[in-house]
Length: 151
Image (tube, rainbow, N blue to C red):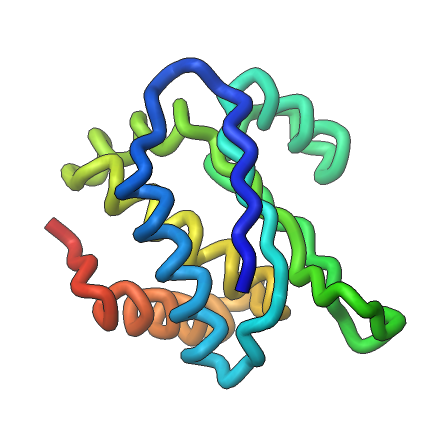
């Protein structure tokens, strides 16, 4: 499993310990679903301005969001030599805001957003209530495996 990091924000220094934790979570998400772990995932850290533009361009929503997922694998995808699962883009600025709002650490929020996006990359969504419950249960199970609990 290869995690490509692209830090395009200057709001907060992204510590190596956080990157290592996120890498473990990406692998744990794949393991949890029984996926092979030879995929590449791109993880970008951005500010609200950049994620706002991405959200507007790709989802036609004119506002910043916390995280966007861009899956590269689906049933219609050709089999490529490189196994690229997809791209995750996290607004570090939004993660800081939400960590304060929810009363937990920035690291916990970044962990949740990463796992949440991993399940999107693997084909899950939360448009329907039952799907949302299933996805949340899987997210929490992966976070618990690595000892990342709600504070």
